[in-house]
Length: 68
Image (cartoon, rainbow, N blue to C red; front, side, top):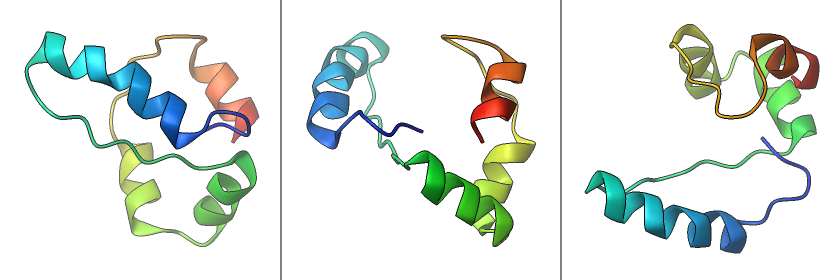
């Protein structure tokens, strides 16, 4: 979720990650407003993500909840 990161930057950063982990990464990027709307609308994909465990690379669970 980002209001400033674009797909070009995201894919550029993931190229090295894909090489390291040996598999393709298919990201989905939402703005904060779009994420909130999808949460409110019970979007199936977002609902599934919210039930899955997360590994926080930056911040923690509280930071994620505040930004949603």
